[in-house]
Structure formats: structure tokens, C-alpha cells
Length: 96
Image 1 (cartoon, rainbow, N blue to C red):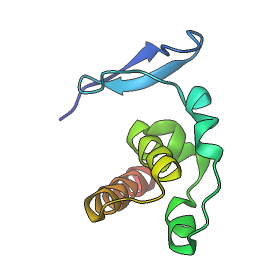
Image 2: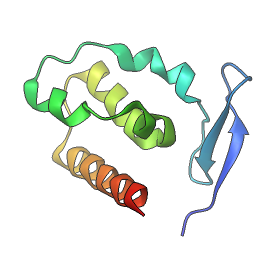
Image 3: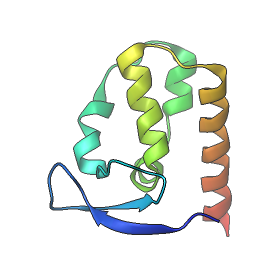
């Protein structure tokens, strides 16, 4: 079980972000939102990243994967699999 807590964002120092002990650099959703607005041309990736904003707000990992794809234009199979697994877990938690 991972312990989560809230900490002030390192950039804006206004908003709190939910973080884990494994996370070294804390950024809130609002600060990362600017980086996530890049254009995605691949239809498969558009479908993969077509998630409600609340998922991205809750999960730093999802935001990080999307930003990585926008920066570098590709993801490894392991990254895609981890992304899908995380989304499934979030959906299951919402149903409960």
C-alpha cells in the first residue's frame, strides 16, 4: 500500500498536489496542464489519452505519460500497458 499526502506545488506554490513518497518533484495539475495541451496526431494515441480531466487531476503518472508522449512523439509498450492499467484502477475505484 502506498501512502499519499498533499504537498504544495514547487512551481506555483499555491495549489496542493496529492503525492506519494516515491515522487521526487511535486507539480499540481494546473502547472502541468499547459504542457498537456500539445497536439496528438496519431488516432490510437488520441483514443488512449481521451480521458476525463478528473483522471489527470488525480494521477500524476497519467499526466507524466501524456506529457512524455507530446514531447517525444512515442511511448514504449510498457508505458502504454502501465497507462491502461492505471486507468482501469481509477475506473474501478470510481465504481466503488
